[in-house]
Image 1 (cartoon, rainbow, N blue to C red):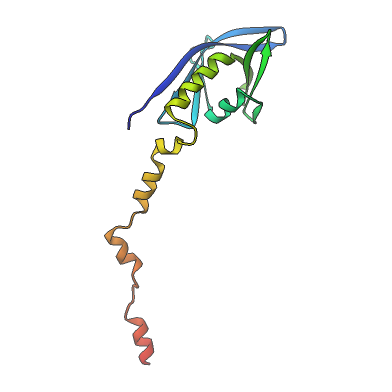
Image 2 (image 1 turned 90 degrees about the vertical axis):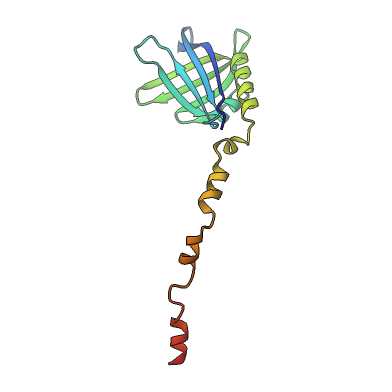
Length: 159
């Protein structure tokens, strides 16, 4: 199976307060061999980047309306007349509110949707083919599915 990767470098803004935010270089990543997920890597100036993975469907919906609960929430809004997408991320290590340019996120999402259209994700994983292979009968199944004591019923009838 051919794997396709769709990536985009962009600058997010980490919102520290209503008046203050700091730029955060980030990379959006999508792989056709992991078709339900999007991967976001934040380069925050430490030795190791921060990685988040969540449902592509959540980000697709979040471009249009508020969605998500728990660790990841996404919603659209406008800042200074520009469309942005806000992502609220929560973990045991802390919480972050990130702002992304809606146009850049949307164009990247459109590319992922062309690679793997919505509703066809399971086909990419080959789940149906794998299940069919696992559940396909084999010659040994006849031994297990047959009556292990075929002569017992006739013996009981004779007594």
